[in-house]
Image (cartoon, rainbow, N blue to C red; front, side, top):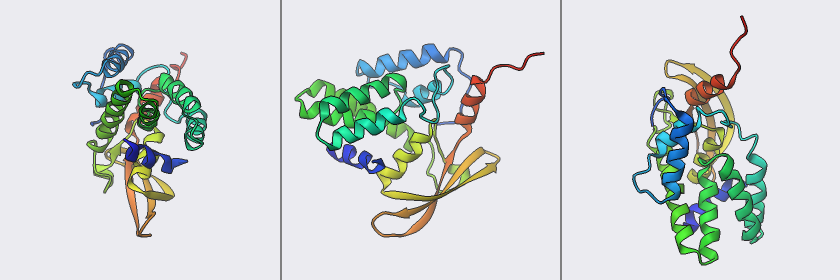
Length: 211
């Protein structure tokens, strides 16, 4: 977990969206399952349900500052403050995988093996859900994200620096094409992220037009 946590600091660091009958209830139930350590927790369903609830925050307006403050405290070896910030961010958006990963490392340092194991499993489950959603090599096989923060997580863990962004209109929906440079080799390339879930979730939050 220390390796995952350190990779997440580099940011200072699935499936297509489907109709969900009771997104708030589904999201709450899946969060509870994850917190209870249920190995069968469906993290893809959790991420999709999160995008459909009223408090959905696709651009991190509620959590970005908490994450930056938590990461800064983590770097300063102030895990007490870091945990407070990460837990506050998680309470607003349970799908932030690196918040769970860094919290796990702090819990490990505090000797809380149970808490560390729980948060590590959640972090891995969320990240695996993103990884299996595509391969990022083309618009058709783009990773399907539910928040822009997931783009940052993917780039950080892969050791890639984003150098430019282009929004594409495709048959698969809107896609972010990000120009990248490998942090170690300097090799340049591109990676693709499907934004369909973000667009659908954001549209659901807009008030219905008055007639």
